[in-house]
Image (cartoon, rainbow, N blue to C red):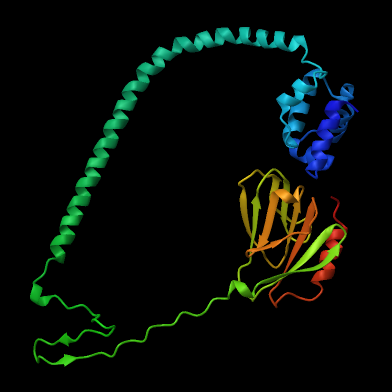
Length: 316
């Protein structure tokens, strides 16, 4: 194994990523990734792809590719014929560029008058719309102007009751009893949501989240550094993908826990803080796999067994 390959492999393992994870992120075939770690560059399709693949691999595991190349100078350089091919391509495109330059003055000559017509049209349209709006506002103000003696008093009097309404013919007044103020229904308190470590299934720690029926349970993930993070809706990585990729310091994500549960995988746990409605959860490991199960009193029995079965069939 070369020093460069050992450097990349150590960075990958520190992030808790497998070669399959790197393959999915970089779209580079697994056998080429293994060849880079082993320093066997003959397996790669050509010397031009060696540096490109190494650079992509390094970025995926959080290593500066330029510093890596400079430190390990035994990486094959791009073939000379690539540079010659680029020069030939540039020369072959030169006549086409010259032909386009001949049409440029004609294009500008026709574009300028068209732009002037568009500006005039837009100005005229905006002026007409403004005049119509002014007429509409003037008509509304005229209709709203009435004899002060005919204006009805406000329906609400001071103190919360209804104002007395005067009858022009008899002069009698009628008082309406004040209406009762509706009392808002209480909402479930976040203090009634509890999170407890229930059991373990292989490398996965399963937490039971108990919440009142109808309440919203929020899962917050705050990143303080680089970590490979995967979030799925369901009991394992076969569920709907909610988040997938590297985090950076300052990243904040929020998800709503549903009855299907939520599966979280953090390649470097110290760089990610996971909390459920403000309650921080951790399994104390460098690389974490957590499963959140929601218990709102309506879920059917047997959920624990299904979660364990789903986890056991997952290939990480």
